[in-house]
Amino acid sequence: MSTNERRAVNGKLVSVPVALTMAAFALLPAGAAVASSSPGATTTPAPGAGSPTPTPGAPVTPQPAPPAERVKLKMSGVGGKPLFAGVGAKLVIYGRITPYQVGQRATIAFYLRRRQIGSELLRVAPRTDGSGSFQVRLAIHAAGPLTAVAAVHVAPGVVASAHTPVVQYVHTGITPGTSGGSVRVLQSELNRMHYAVPLSGVFDEATERALIAFRKVTGMGREGLAGTELFRKLAHGEGAFPVRYRHDGRHVEANLTKQVLAEIEPGGKVRDIYTMSSGKPSTPTVVGRFSVYMKTLGVNAKGMVDSNYFIRGYAIHGYAEVPTYAASHGCLRVPIPNAPAIYSWVRLGTPVDVYDQGGGGSTHPRGNAGP
Image 1 (cartoon, helix red, strand yellow):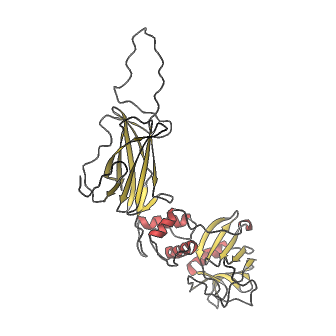
Image 2 (image 1 turned 30 degrees about the horizontal axis):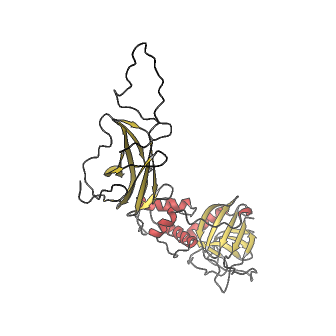
């Protein structure tokens, strides 16, 4: 066993570097049978371990079936759908065996990218409900898919086992221009929260825009960067757009406080969330409930792209400059690459709800707004 490995018994921290080299861990003894932990499964005796043959003519007393041994595993320190964790983060695996037998031991083997990187032998502690429990803390210092398999010997040559779901370990400090599995997890989580983002596995400008929108909604710094805290918020399901007008059917909501625009499907279901820039303090965006009365495709003389007018000269449109703060002449600016998708989804008559959580904004438009 490598000196770099720290073994843990009874729940102590295990540090498992990727460079770990060790003899292959024999999960099951030769010829042993495995009891699946799936519901309804029963423990199977090893070959040749059947009941003795009754004497001919002797009365046979029915024996109750032995309880099925089952192993169940759960984890903490992970989140997301599918599950992920940051490289170096501590993961705790909790196990339970039913029923408990005195002196039981559990073996957990760890696999990163389908390669075994370590194993732990743990004592099973009795519980008041007749089951036994065990746990191990784990720290992985490389990216990739991790799974763990637990096995508990319940009888000579008989093993009950279970495995954890796959946990994708990711680099949380990814930067624009990078690609790979960590970026795919980032994009997948943003997409799950309905931010307009590609699923390309490449950290491009579209991914940066989605990150800015997510950071706005969660109150983080408004830059297109990832990081440990951002991944933590994604893992905990933070960043949901706070829909205010769920009964407005298919509509658009512009949250001036968060500086984001969202397309809302009937029933208050969020479709897509975009970063935007509304009217600056000297030319604030009109606040209220409106509806799109005119649409113009393409670029106009003011540089407005794919415009959706909801009152007088106020429109949702693409623009070359979309800072992270309110900077327009009253319109709702969105990045030009997002403008065609918004233009395609918004229809004539689509309600547009514009509101400011801070109570600011203008309730009376002053003439024609600009870009």
